[in-house]
Length: 413
Ligand code: AMP
Ligand code: MG
Image (cartoon, rainbow, N blue to C red; front, side):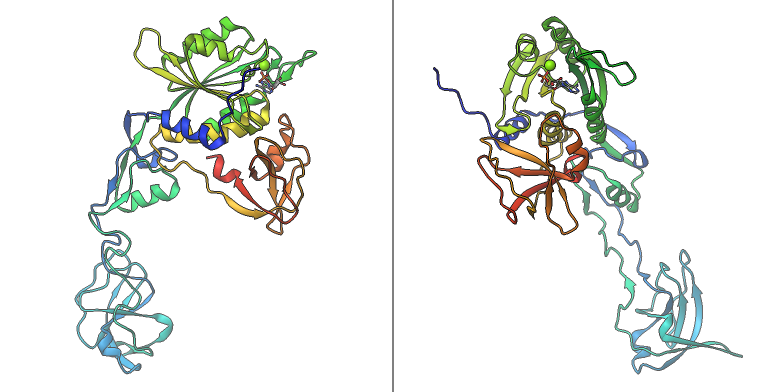
């Protein structure tokens, strides 16, 4: 018997995949309002200070701190400055009534909140008693305190979430250059597959992976072409791969990637391109494949990732490998999900030779409960769970042990 080459670890496989990615070079300019979920192509610099002027953080009175040193100053109210209006220079010995967000008038150097002031109406006009000795700068938001003009506010490769869009808008950016959406083709191998809405013939199952994988791809902002169910035949698999390679960055398939006689993905990829990586020492998800499909009559090739058919396996391998791959394709530098060390409130005696990704849920005590059935076809575990425990090869878990937990919130987007 020949010695088998050891399978790649999850970390080795991910390194291999990420090293192979050439990020998409095409960019487009979008209105900032339409850029949610996209990846910034060019670093953005602020032309402005934010805030653009010194302004008050409180409703109250703008004063000269020196006029209020004793803590009982009586000052004539010389003007009223609502937000969005510009006041006059503040004369010594007077105060300006001022409202949150309004520009500090020249000459004033502090704001006293209205709760520390008493207003009197007199024949000569309003007089305010300031029952507080403010420090210079008190309750003033300084020009450029958030952002200095000329500074970089967002780096190239930043994923644009609601926060980033708000920040861009705060410096007046109406448009943003973003990376073109990844074009991803998907298809699903298996003669047993039927679509929801169709009756289930004997021996058939529903194509759940279509729904899971499309949902995941949508979350990552991909433009999806769905070739649907492809029969278990070498010719059909080759034809679909070739067609998909022409105008997609990445082709993702489900099923048919093991070593069974009805598994045509491997030979089809080898015939239409190259298989660069196959099988990873993880559970679920061992038969993951990565390669490239040539573009007939064109330069270049499309990336190929073959996911296992078992629904939990394809879900987990997507989260661990396809998600970072697609992010890197868009030029995102940091594609690693954050992991958390949490307490196992269960025991796991079945150490596996492979690195396992167990479906678990955070309980009300802040520990983890394990889904009782870790079968790779048990989709219920993915709905019940709040993430995956990354359990090293050969590791048993005792109640109370600390484990590495990857929440779905870190893996789905
Ligand atoms: P395969 O990787 O093709 O050997 O499939 C492994 C297992 O996953 C088999 O039980 C298949 O019936 C099942 N399976 C394959 N594709 C899908 C799919 N798209 N949706 C749900 N189950 C699938
Ligand atoms: Mg199959």
